[in-house]
Length: 233
Image (cartoon, one colour):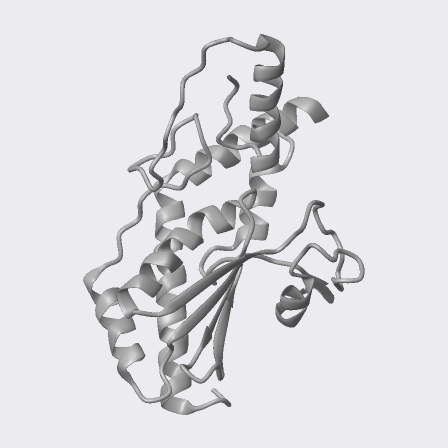
């Protein structure tokens, strides 16, 4: 099997389907069961690493959830191919669990990857374009379907705040552009291969865990500001 940690779920399924088609009927096979959130990413699957909440993060979400009009529900838009989702969604799940929040996770796309700047169900009826359209990310004068999106609501489903893609301290566009920029003497294919390898290295580094924790801190701080200062904050 190839390194599947960086393939989409659909690609992994096709690899296994092709494997069994080539072996034919009656060929023995073994079953591998993976419990996600291992201490580190392996080269066998796409499950995320384990990330622990700090005591102050747990205390903060419990305090927020206990306030009148505090967060009680969370909606997350995610996709398995997104490195930002693989980094943040496990932490979001742990945050919701610690605060007793009802968590629902929705896929962004249907069968096909969406590149639309203004997604609609008419374009992709099997997607969640109607939800995504409410939380488009505006950057450089254009709207984007950036994920993950984590939206927080009160018990009566009043909107409080939403988090998008990555924390403010992670200057992703500049960092990734620098990583993927061709180096002296590299051809296009060499730069692509080396850039992919270096970006995988970044995802396996301690900095991805730093940014995952920072995303939680940003969410907690924003929810606190909303409860203290009101909707105009």
